[in-house]
Length: 102
Image 1 (tube, helix red, strand yellow):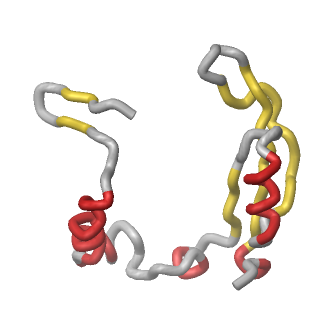
Image 2 (image 1 turned 30 degrees about the vertical axis):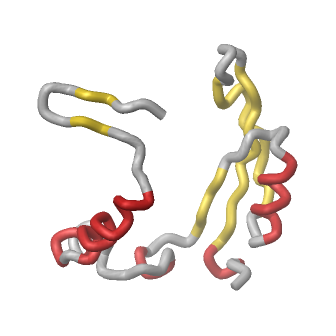
């Protein structure tokens, strides 16, 4: 990933050194309570489903997601563009919160 620089802001890929500062920002009441609802759990935010969309040919990722409870929903055809400009399919997978494997 490259750095994007504008007149007022510079965006760069995050590093491990950024984690403590980002964690501190997330803990502030302005962010944790107002933006995150004051809860760390998915269900605590009123969500009941998680979704993920790996490339349909990424067997290792699909197997890993399946091991934690994600289930295939269907193929999203020509969903994502490859670096060479061609399109590939992705597999839509979901996980209901009450099905989460701990």
